[in-house]
Structures are given as C-alpha cells and as structure tokens.
Image 1 (cartoon, rainbow, N blue to C red):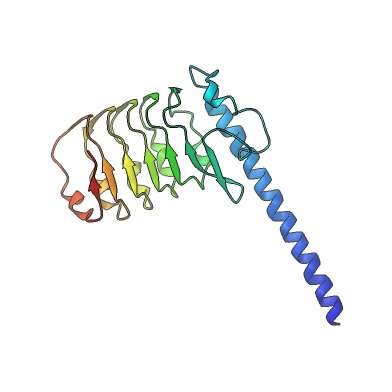
Image 2: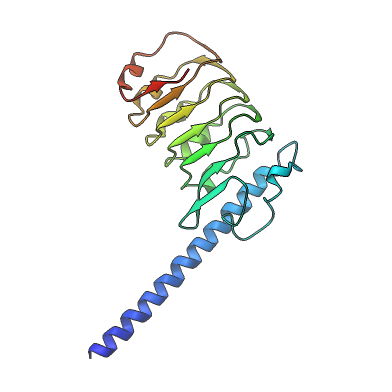
Length: 198
C-alpha cells in the first residue's frame, strides 16, 4: 500500500511540475509577444541596444533590460537606451508581475496612460529625463507597493496628486523640473518614509 501511495504522489508531483512549466512558458510567450508589439511602435526600431528583442517564445531569454523571476517579467530596465516612443501601447495588462519599470533618460513622449494602475506589483517607477507631458494620472494612487517614484525632468503639468500621499510604501519621490502647479497636497505629509530627491 505504501508503494502505491508513493507512486501516486510522484505522478502527481510530475503532473503539477509540468503544469507549472507549461503555465510559465505560456505566460512568458505572451509577455514576449507583448513587449515586441510595444517595441514595434518605437520610432527607432533598429536601436542597437534593443537588437536582442527578437521574436521568441521566451521573454526571459537574453533580452536587453528584461529580467525575469520564476519565468515572468519582473524588471524592465532600458534606462539611457536612446528609445524614441510612447507608453500608449505598453502592455500594462500583460505584465502583472512587473516590479521595476525603469525607462529614464530616453525620448519617451506623450502622456502616462491610466493603465499604469494595472501594474499593481510595481515597486519602482522611474520615467525621469524624458519628454512626457500631460497630467499625472490618478491611477498612480493604486500602486500601493510603490517605493520609488521618479518622474522629474519631464513636461508634466497640472497639480500634484493627493493620491501620491496615500502611497504608504513610498520612500523616494522626485517630481521636480516639470510644470506642476497648485498647492502641495496635505496628504504628502503622510509620507514619513519618503525622502525627496528633487
């Protein structure tokens, strides 16, 4: 009886391992496709730094600036990569495990889409030194795990959002060198962990 139980246990273990691998492969393929679709919107698609972004079933296999954890895209770091493009077609809903989103010192323009709020696992959002305009979307307030928010040195306008003051995990906040106006929300006083950088 004990031998049968061990065999059943081993069969179940193999089944769930294969199921896990299949699920991660499918997710990685979806993420790879989504990132390539976003790259296809760049004005400089032949960017040599992003030459490793080629069709593949695996978003985690040797792509510049893409770091994965457990087979899912966890970090996207293409700082200072001479990218010219927008965030409009970024696959926000296809990257649910993204924690680090670093696109600073490029030529991203246009607004920050409200879909940014779909990145609920985000710890770091660094978009500084781009050409991003418009207002800060209120959906930033739903990024409750956010610890670092660097959106300075852009062309953002409008008020500083009250919602930013409710991001309890925030430790670094940089909003300067924009065209923000109005008063500083009292809610920013809630950010006792935050040390402004600019």
